[in-house]
Image 1: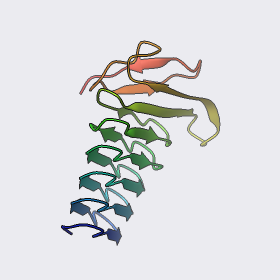
Image 2: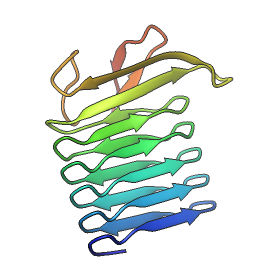
Image 3: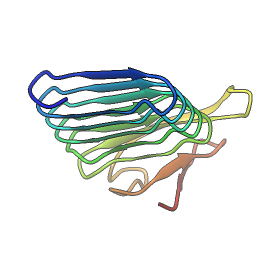
Length: 140
């Protein structure tokens, strides 16, 4: 999709969604079904193993709930939330991250959120969360 208010939704194995424009959101569900958006308030949400979400733009949030599904944002006041097993998140200057540490059965061991620049969280750096609720810097 492209343009103001232009949304995209997909479901299925590797069924990806991409949007560009103001309020242009993307949502996917399925194994490796990724979502990417660009624009003011252009959010991305995914559900499924390895179903990543990435956004750029002011207030453009990214959220994932699948195992090993990562969330990344680069816009100011944007939040990257990765809520599945073995997932990671990163955000740009003025953004924030939210992470959950789960065991292999899906039980929550820890959950933590932070703004970039607080609690040792650096901009444009991948983080996971350990069972003690500490942010762990990850490689690209």
